[in-house]
Amino acid sequence: MHLLLRTLLLLITSRRRTPLSVWETSSLPLRVLPTDIDLAMHVNNGMYFSLMDLGRFDLMVRAGAWDRMRARGWSPVVNLETITFRKSLTLWQRYTVESRIIGFDEKAMFFEQRMVADGEVYARAYIAARLVSSAGPVPNEEIFAEVGHPPADLVLPEFLHRWREENALPSTRRPAPHAW
Image 1 (tube, rainbow, N blue to C red):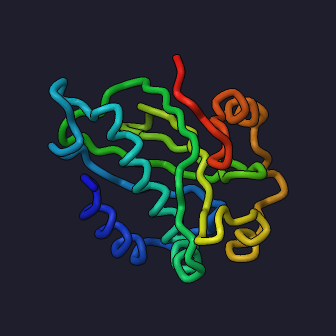
Image 2: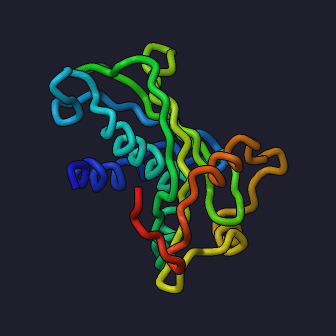
């Protein structure tokens, strides 16, 4: 909710930016705002993921995929994510959120996203997201029918296959009891 207004504004302004293919990289220029920082005066670790949401929305809107997804009743949901921090983004600093799709598996599309300032990577994240409808997860072939098939050289790196397997929780159709 804390980025609701920024997200709504982005959904409008991204339509005015240069169109992209969904297989290209989006570069979204931003500035660190007071609502992004914590008591240490840098972007809060949890805020990075929220700001990266904006980057994925920018890519989807500029590629025309957002309107097609919404028309079909599809919503994006993040299934798995990890981030590595290198440097801190500080108040009023300019940076870009770089976002690209790097592959698919049978359950999700995978994004690589970077926070970049002054030509340097400050943080990098990998996000597995899926599209869902009222009938459940949307199969890849339906997604590809809407946005086009990925380039032949778009192959999900092996370490991301392992990452998914090693971090997976049981499906929602199976119990997942809490026990330490």
